[in-house]
Image (cartoon, rainbow, N blue to C red; front, side, top):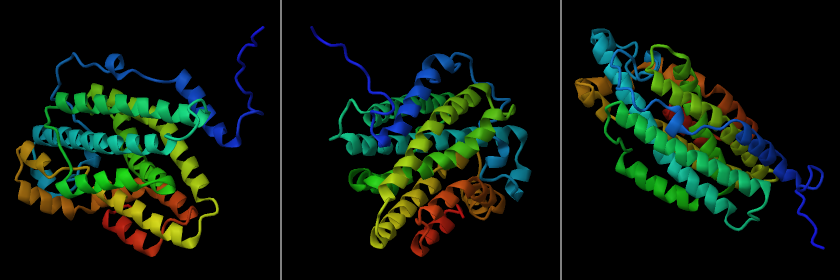
Length: 304
């Protein structure tokens, strides 16, 4: 007589599967389908911002003071679309790194099951971001060619803690700003829904990335930490500096040259970025990934 298949109990499962199992349980209870959750049918209401104005790259500058209310709203819509496009770029990199990481592992394990669940969520997020950016009236923004090619190399060679720590940086930075946007009634409702979905589901991804980074670094020597700290910092620099595409200013009807100059000198925006990364920097420091060479890149990106 054939015996029935019994799923391993928590005592039987490997210890490394514990976090993955909890995340799978969470995803089973709380997950979204953006195709039905987001209001794609209602036409864009241009009386709303696309993101909280305080997160705009020009907020607080003399140029911002000169803009009309309509211009400010259009700029935040273009910037929100640019951030979404950068998110798609990195989510594609993330999916390939995670797939490569679990390629040789037991597909029935909780770790691989979670990895595949995360990839499925990231696929839905990318589709959601693309549709959202299109509805905001923005083009398909792309990072600069050098950043795109660097991403191509990174997704191919990054592994272990370098891959998961870089994933964590990208997700943490987006998480903080989107938590503000999803609560802000000045932001167009469908974007608030998008942000809420992303924040809820990315909280699981961040937990897994932190857990994997810590586990992969366990017992790592000084040279390995030094190399990976620099790799993560360089990747983080290009992710963060690619969030606001320079073309957003011209597409919002602004003087691109002047807007770029004032955005680069905007201390308010730099302060917002630093404050959003305080928890992340504490984690990287505790993991001994804030080396002097790495710090130079984080400072250039205004993350510390």
